[in-house]
Length: 273
Ligand SMILES: NC(=O)c1ccc[n+]([C@@H]2O[C@H](COP(=O)([O-])OP(=O)(O)OC[C@H]3O[C@@H](n4cnc5c(N)ncnc54)[C@H](O)[C@@H]3O)[C@@H](O)[C@H]2O)c1
Image (cartoon, rainbow, N blue to C red; front, side, top):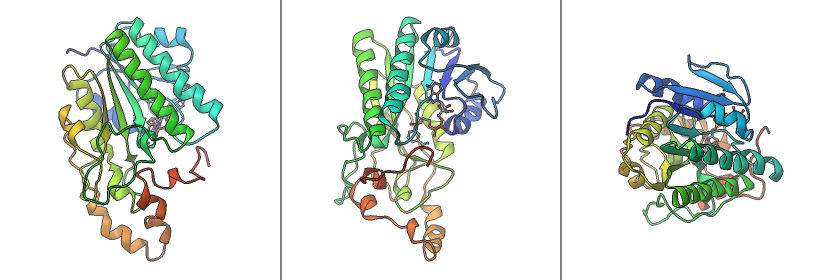
């Protein structure tokens, strides 16, 4: 597959800032799309619009072969806002991609689409396509993102890869994320693999690094040519030393019970607060 140009929604967000420079360095041409103006466009063309504005989105995505769809609310929030940004927004992106006969769509799903899956205690790994068990309205919206991707694949033949992104930070933020960390460099490798792989069809793939303490399968990533190189273990000693004075870094009961951790509790952390 020859990709000439990529549309990337959510281009003013933090995940976009992590992956755009790496994708440009690998020779990809990107047009960024966001409702906010980014602090840094990294030299990419940029279109300021909401993904829900289908006419504007159509113009922004015209001439692109692939869309990486990151735009949305990235944590728990009010249902109406989640529904509009994450579900309606994704349907708009898929609809425009199909109308423009684009080759491929990469959707940002989340570990919280399956956040009530129990943490394995027998050494087994959680499969890339484990059934949805959302832990929040946010998780429900990501399950809907995956369902929409499946619909557009089955109905229109679009190739759609849904990335169940685990915990993307510069470094692990606590004991739980030693298992679920996705490093910024591995995020670039993951999105690049989504662009390079031949004929992916529809699939869900974990977005996670090669963590010693990991419990999310690497099979789906390997199948699309994703070879993560980072391991959170190099942060473990320092993290446990810091936990002597900051016990909140240690795994909570929620973290030990469910892969969505405290996001699976009745009071999940919320967007903006
Ligand atoms: N950061 C992580 O660890 C993580 C984990 C799992 C999933 N994800 C998913 O990855 C994506 C990006 O996350 P992020 O951390 O960069 O979030 P972010 O909040 O930093 O960026 C999201 C961007 O989307 C834009 N946006 C929101 N609604 C929009 C709309 N209707 N139209 C146009 N632009 C809109 C925002 O302006 C923002 O710039 C999200 O879909 C999130 O759910 C992130």
